[in-house]
Amino acid sequence: ENKRRYRARRKEYVSDLERRLAEAREQGVKATTEVQSAARKVVEENGQLRDLLRLAGFADEDID
Image (cartoon, rainbow, N blue to C red; front, top):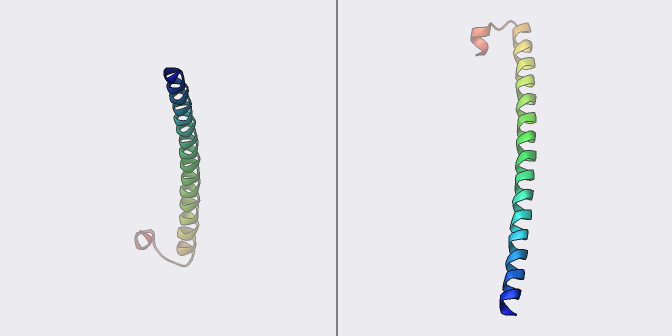
């Protein structure tokens, strides 16, 4: 009886760990996607700001 309960608790514990690992991986993928999206937005905004500086008369070497 004790062995059966131990095995049942252990199985439940392992299942819980597997579920938590899957959730952590999913959150990691989501975070990575959000960071990549934010990075693309920053690159786009930097390009727009560089264009504005060029229109204002700044040379490329002054912008960098």
